[in-house]
Image (cartoon, rainbow, N blue to C red; front, side, top):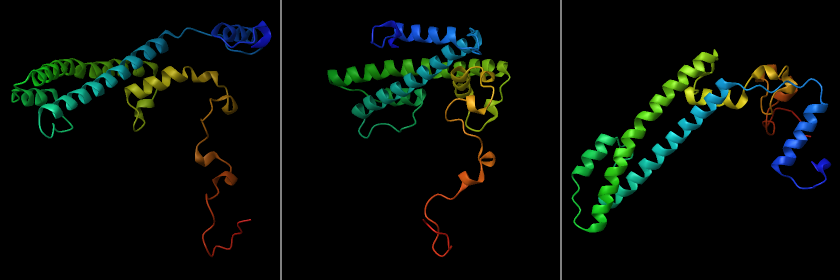
Length: 196
């Protein structure tokens, strides 16, 4: 970092330092542009944004309905249910009318956004399947999670062995040495094991 003589940390300095290391280190893998992973990253980021938009709209709609209806509406509310509920509300004052109008607009936006995550999931499922990975076979990993993992980790063959793996990728418990499988906490009373 300080080889440039500036003594300040900037993006340009970081890039220069990385370039210096790259020219002087042997055995580094060449950087390749993996178009499939770039596409996956774009789509998975978009899917995340769609989920955030959905959550934000539902929260806004719930807030407006709480102000329009005593006690508000139920938590899990579909667009059709919200529309039917809104049809029963006839506010008389300007503030109430504005709330109802904004709620109706939110319901329209909600209907449009509601379809998009399903379409995005379908596209991500096809893209993840084309990689040949079995990540989606794991319980709790859907198309968005699998695509996020693939986009962030990239080509796993760049880690030739366990010591070069990313931090936090510990071996499974059955392959750890016996010493690391010891009980956590103090021994049970009467076991005869020393705590010292």
